Length: 453
Image (cartoon, rainbow, N blue to C red; front, side, top):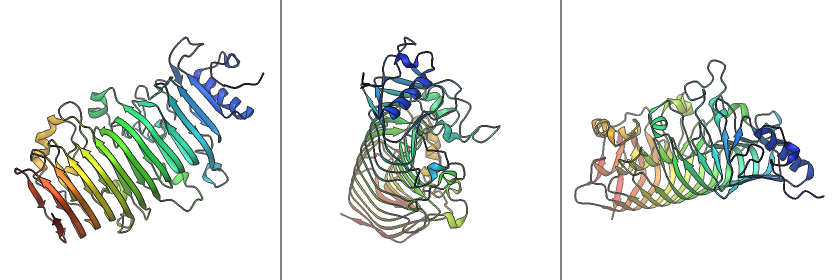
C-alpha cells in the first residue's frame, strides 16, 4: 500500500523517543520521495499533547515539516538546536556543493515551538567549563540553504535567539507569533538575548512578513557580523557575504530591552536594498518592559567592531526605505554608524514616546530601560550625550511626515542629534505639540540638519 502521509505516530516507530520518531519519519519521507512529514497535535504512544525534543532534528533538502497543532518542547537541561538543515555545521555545508534546497517548516492549527526552561547555557556561560557556544540554543538554524520557508506557528520562551539564517537566500519567514511567559526572568534575570528572527552573513532575497508578539532582545535583526564562534567557522565559499534585498513588512511587536528592527554591519560587510513598511511597536508603558528603539540602525560598541578598521564605513549600509511606522518606544528611529541613502516616510510617535528621531549617539542608546520603574535612571542621563569614539556619518537621509505626540516626559525634543556628521540630512513635515521642542542638537554635531515644512 502506498504511503501518503508520514507521521511520527506511525507504529513503525513504537518504542522510540519523540525525537527519534520525528527523525525516523523524516528519514522515511526522504527515502520514499514523499518529502513531507506531519507532526500532529496528539502524541499517541505517550498519550500526550506534548512532543519532547532531546536532540537536533536534521532536515535534508526537499523536505517539508508540517506542524499540525502540535507543541514541541525542548527537554529540560538539553543543549541542542531543535530544527537544523542536515549539512549545517559540517565541512560539506560550507561549500557550494553542500548547499541545500527546498526546506520548509510550516505550522497550522496553533502549532507551538517551546524553548522550555532555561538550561546551563547563556551569554555568560557560553564557551566556558566545557559548554558550547550559546548558538546551540537556537530553535531553528538554516545555513547555506536556498528556497526555504518558515511560517505559521508560535514560538514560546526561546532560550537564545528563536531562529537564525546564514548564507540563506530566496526564502520567506512569515505568520509567526512570539510569546514570553516569564517576564521577571526574561527582563531582570540572567541575560539570555532572546532575539526573534536573525539574518546573518550571506542572506539575501528574503521576505519577512506578518510577525507579531514579544521578544527579550531584538525582535528582528539584520546583522552582517563576523564572529569567531558563529560566523567564521561556518563561512561558505560563496563570495556574497552581505545582507541585501530584504523586505520586512506588517510587523507588530515589542522588545523587552532592545529594538523592534536592528541593522548592523562591520569589517567591510554591507547591508543594502532593505525595504520596511507597516511597522507597529506595541509597548504598553507601565504594563510590561519597553522597547528602547523601534528602528536601531548601527552602533559603535567595541563588542561589534573591536579594532578601528572594523568599524562600519560610509557606503557599507545604503539604500534603505521605511514607510509607515507607529511606535511607543523610547526612540522611534535611531541612526548611528554610517548610513547612506535612506528614505523614511510616515513616522508616528505616540504621546508616551521619547524621540521620534535621533541622529547619532545619545544617552538613550547607552542604557537598558527595563520598565517604567526605571524612569529615574533615564532622567539622570537623558540630557547627557553618549560620547562615541566614532561619530555617526549620515548621508543623503530624508525623513518626511513625522507626527510626534510626545509630551516631553521621555525626551526633551522630537528630533535630537549628537556625535554625528550630517551630509544632506532632511526632516520634512514634522508636526509636534506645543509643549515639545522640535529639534535639539547636543554636542559633536557636524553639518546641518535641514528642517523643512
